[in-house]
Image 1: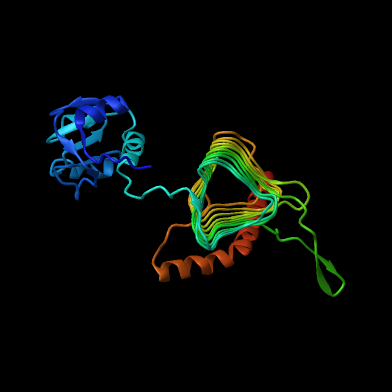
Image 2: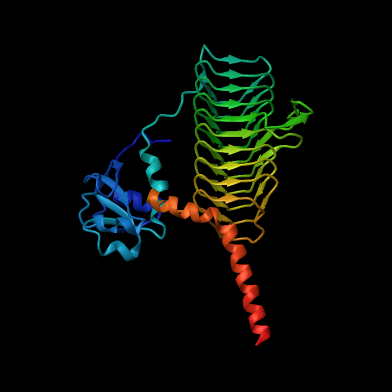
Length: 349
């Protein structure tokens, strides 16, 4: 949460975040910016070498960067082993968004059987169902709906219009962004001769400490057991997590990705945007998937990287390649026939 003080000297920032100061420690900082947009009272950072070209012309009051880049900085700098991480920690004190005031808005509906901890904020038109337990210092945003028997640990933040299905359980400091739906029924249907019948979704969703879930992401409740997110899982906007999926601790999933039911993804995995997993797979710890990759089989080798996409190309070139791709099976048979003929010729010699 932002501090009441929005001006800090570089000496203060250096000491607070244990960063080496090079330059004028009395320089006052009141906000953040990019290398191109930052002014003399802003701090910025250089983490990606692609932006090193912008360093010489920056007007920033200070730049967070690596020691190897400090010599090229035209002004003050704070030296960090990981400039992006250092920036993430420092920028939090300049967040202008105020914390929600504790209290229950008069338009909210809170069940008499719900247990509400100290310092909780429940916004306009929010609904908290029977036997819910809301930990201390939680924020329930406007229009959010918690069905019965949900449990939230201390310090959780649900932004506007979040829906938690029956029995969802969260650890501490979980952040859920607007429009997310957690604990809706999974896609369970059984075909009965000439029509579909619904399979009851009897599990719930269990979310560990310090997770963050993006806008309009959906996490389905388990069919029998629970759908589980271990601690510090980070899910971007517009993702779909199917029923009985298990996501290991510290895994991050970027936007527009989907995980089909009963897939187990290990710890410290990095899933780039637009990726997808078939159901009932096992994905090893520290697996990385590049953007738009589709996993159709289990990945059992920890620490490996995977990619399965075609880069964009001019449409006429793609049409020619697609035409040849359709003939690939025929071409493979012809190659096998030629190989057999060559083997016969070699034997005859």
